[in-house]
Length: 404
Image (cartoon, rainbow, N blue to C red; front, top):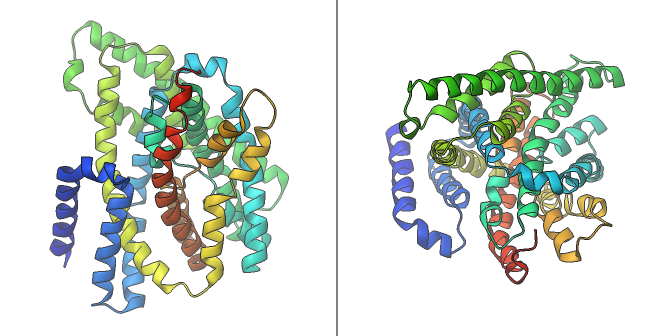
């Protein structure tokens, strides 16, 4: 059975590779394609296995991939930050700040709707909201890379996506600890977790990045390595910074993103962009496998959904939970209605939500299956909704090219 699964994955990778241009024209993104592949595989396996047994196997397999998913997300965060144009952000830093101001409002909105639909405790509802709040800029890559879209908008969404992943982790850990009865539900305990996670990330990323840049410059001066033949350089840096921060109980995602920002600012090398791109290719391959496994698991988990509220919540989470709060935070200033809507709209849920879901499952909390179903349904809808809407919305900016 395992070799049949690997063969199916290999076939999917091969078909995608030889038809990537046609799939792109059909608005079928890579996450869509590979998640659909996983779904087909999951449905095929479901016809030969008991439903409960298949569910257990799939979730256990997905939990085993948690470190791989975390490292893949860390590479994306590092590389996205390392390509950020800080010159642009220095003149328009208000945009990512306003986007981040919508983060707590989005959580509150999501928790309130969850409480109304599922009648769970407020702690469980906030846990659901936190899981589906982080955004994944890679799922709207067409928009992020489209040169017709003003740079400050693309960079604002990119920076916000990198930071909200890490900022949601301390909130998630606090709520998870309270529900698991390991943490007291006090302001002091929450502040302690938040300061520890973020503070450790900032210190570790600053110290390690400074040391790494110094070593790179010395190694380059003495010809210890060839820039053209070091595709694993930035992957190794992302792994190192993320893992050291995690060991010290900080937010590895914030550390990876801040490390990338520092590299963008202080490391100058003619081959930097090429090395980052090669590192992204490795991350993309891992992400393809992850989306296949996610699609496989989702096909089993979501077929077991009996509550209509799960799909209603997923639709609202995809379309409104971010849109309304962020749009309100963007009122005022020189933005047009179209620009406010665009910035508020793009909030796809992706790898970060998968990571938080797996961290939840490791605790085996009450209502864990329901929360998993909500998270998976939201990610599933998000991949298709934002993947299909990226190009049409990008085209709206064609006539305003050059407005920075």
